[in-house]
Length: 321
Image (cartoon, rainbow, N blue to C red; front, side, top):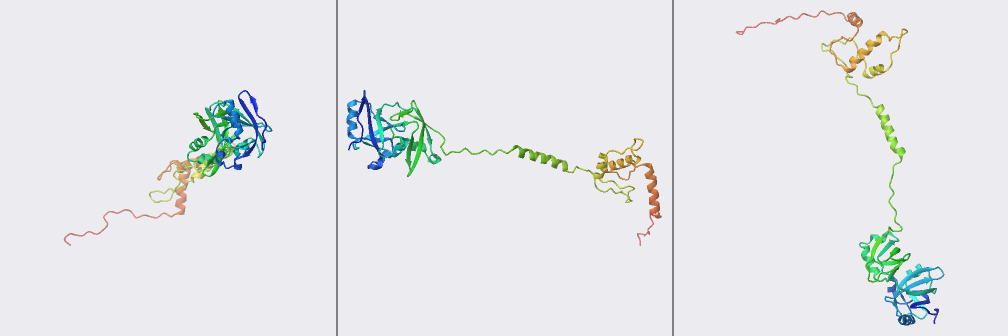
């Protein structure tokens, strides 16, 4: 039964409308891995009489959606008015089983460049994707910008978009040296770069300044001083922390605008205790305290008469016995 339209002749061109069906309707599963269709024998007779160029290439057009693709031909064994094509090609043209498609012979330039974009990253996980792609494209006659071809490998189907073709939107890849380039897969996401916020970067600097202020300053000679002769000290050295704090505090002025008399003596004693180690020297203490301190020691501790040193007070012995 014939479902197609009439043939059209435009010079040496061939144009025919057929009903399309997927390759699963006939025992030709091999056409799913390429871009070749199966046409009726009457199409071969018309094409032979037109003396068209080989290889035979065709333009497929869905008039309802104005989707266009290109293909080659494998055999002329289909029923009249029908053609069989790969299912992925029907998806590109938005065709259903039994829809009409216009077939027209064309001449395409040989391709020099093609840019491909896989749908998923799984295709790049193959050990040698370029070799697999080269083997697969041997079953293709032409490529069209905007199409999505199917690559079958290891019992899995990979879909690849034709992003760009040169020198035209449709090229022939039969017996041609074509440069192939890959675009990032559609599901590829660039790794996010972690950038520390400005507030967190400033916080440690402020904390370091605060901790530096709270650190204790180095205070030399903070121990207890003792005299070499074993006697008690006439004064007690002030702690370094209190002396430094007193040095930092401003002197309280008296009514005449002068500092109190005892402030100089305290500060001098504090400096002596903090910065120097003095053995039995009272040169920085005021004269009044030097006189008063011995009196207090005389009153508190009664004087003890120390025995005078006498040399050779032992017994003498003779060597003879």
